[in-house]
Amino acid sequence: MLLNPLCPFGAARVLALKATVVLLLTLLIKAKVRITAFSALGIVLLLLQTLLVLAAGGALGLLAGAAGLYALQQRRMATA
Image 1 (cartoon, rainbow, N blue to C red):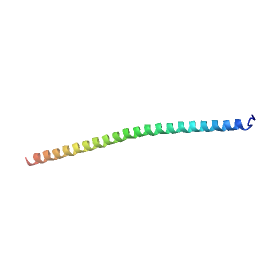
Image 2 (cartoon, helix red, strand yellow):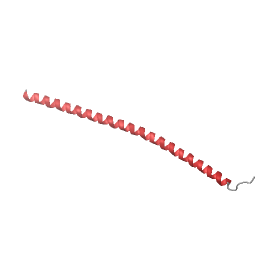
Image 3 (cartoon, helix red, strand yellow):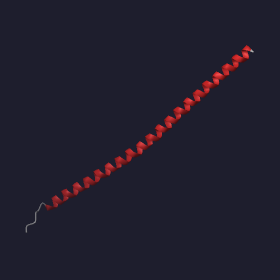
Image 4 (tube, rainbow, N blue to C red):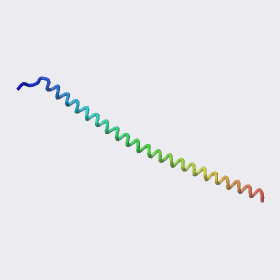
């Protein structure tokens, strides 16, 4: 049986392909984890923004109501 002199190169090529596949799978998993993490962060920031808008709207509504009551009270005092 004759040994193929190019056999070590073939083995090296197969090992290089395996290493490339492992590297690409690692990068894919890393990207998936990153996307998930930043997606969760985006959801948290969206909830925070929504709560701040609702709080600001409530504060402005309360301020407008207080200003209306103050104006009504001033009008009653002026007519009395």
